[in-house]
Length: 183
Picture 1 (tube, one colour):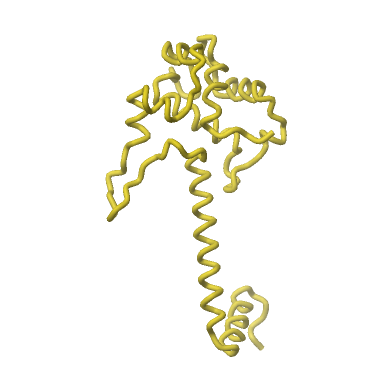
Picture 2 (cartoon, rainbow, N blue to C red):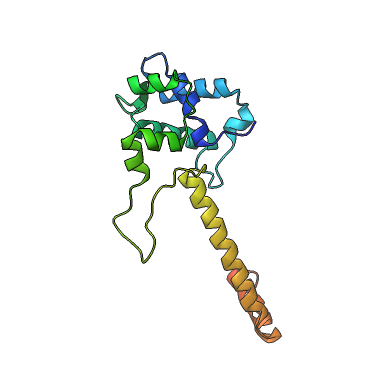
């Protein structure tokens, strides 16, 4: 089974803490993984950056968004408890989506619609609540796109050069990689 997107973890997260008791992050993660019947392979899947598991990343973003909406509270670092609003929403059988949270919880709307202090010419940075990727996943995808574009541009530039230039480029590259001293 594929790891659900962060916004698909809202309901399982609230369900995991629905008893009204304080739960540790580890307990919540274990309970959510059991609810979703995730395999050890699913839980071991890494983000492209290899810095965090996909499950932990998405669960943390689900927690952040639920907390911003006032549905979850964190009495101390790494612990979570459902709020009255969270319990009411969980038992209402309403589909919990970013759009629902934005239209019904002003604190969530303020969070997702905030802009950075620095405005560029025609672009301000904001979180797009309809995106199903976490910010890390978006950054990894953007990084890959930039690298691919740079590689294409570099190859196009090299292809426009003379054969002599290309031969010298290869020799310089080999030297830089310590494959010899160029004769």
